[in-house]
Amino acid sequence: MELFDVYPLFDITPEKAFGCVVWDNKANQYLDLYGGHAVISIGHSHPHYVQKVAGQLQQIGFYSNSIQNPLQKELATKLGEISGYDSYQLFLCNSGAEANENAIKLASFETGRKKFISFSKAFHGRTSAAVSLTDNPKIIAPVNENPNAKILPLGNLEEIEKELAKGDVAAIIIEGIQGIGGIIIPDASFLEGLRELTKQYGSLLILDEIQSGYGRSGKFFAHQYAYIEPDIITVAKGMGNGFPVGGVLIAPEIKPWAGMLGTTFGGNHLACAASIAVVDVMNKEDLVENAEKVGNFMMDELNAIDGGFSVRGKGLMVGIEFPVEVAGIRKKLLFEHHIFTGVSGKNMIRLLPPLCITEEEVSTFLKAFKEVLAIN
Ligand SMILES: Cc1ncc(COP(=O)(O)O)c(C=O)c1O
Image (cartoon, protein in one colour):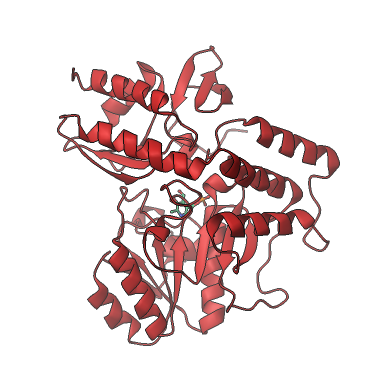
């Protein structure tokens, strides 16, 4: 059987990884400034993580969601503490799209409404309701076309209020920082405006923190740069450091009933062990603080380079935007300097390294980056 060929691939075969370093099958060493799409949070193969996941597998890897699983409660408690949302409730699932799908469903149940607002350049995943709120017609199949999805420009509170005032909007969904859309940071005042308006018109506010959450921005959630508490927050990516897991954090006012949401695999023992290990390491190694410190260092150093590009980001979620296409720069970084980076669109290099990255490792990148741009 052939693989269904949907991914353009680099001809590199990683075999081993540790911290921010990856080795391929020819023993070449790479520096990872992308974390496999913002997934690696505490670093590749962290010993505590390996021990927790392997140890759990030796005990029990999976049962269903019809039995007691104390690991789910341990994870919810630890996530509540580290995020500052200890009064919220946690629903566990398996991916970012699934987390958003459940958040959307929950908001619709809670309000009895069907309409959702999202923003231009947003990305919320590829499943049915989530993709209908994703601003990329290429990935919306006819079955995903949704007359109840309204995509509005980011930042225009007046236009949003007009839509909310119709009284039929279940929720607004917004990324803490737009990732795939090009590291676009919503103003704190805009988020605070959304919070006020959604309350005023009986709609909910969903923060998609799948890429920008879990410490990446230098705060646990990127929206915590503003003074807001959303009704629903979605997480995935960094939550499992590579183990597929997602979660929905739900405000205490939203009450569950048996069977309201569900999944076979969500919250399984292995996923919980991986996610608990992530929070343990983030606490022990102060990784949120490290993301802020090393992120600031990286952005200051990048801003000091006169290279015809502009830089934006927060913490370790950084975009370097050029007036020209960046595919060549990225290829040189990868094949000549062995550094993994990502892109947003055609003109932006996107950096999403593990949160344990050091200033020395960032300096290695900066040196290579200047060489690629032929800057002394
Ligand atoms: C902001 C955001 N939401 C949702 C998703 C979808 O997550 P997943 O690929 O785990 O379904 C992504 C993935 O890139 C994302 O960046």
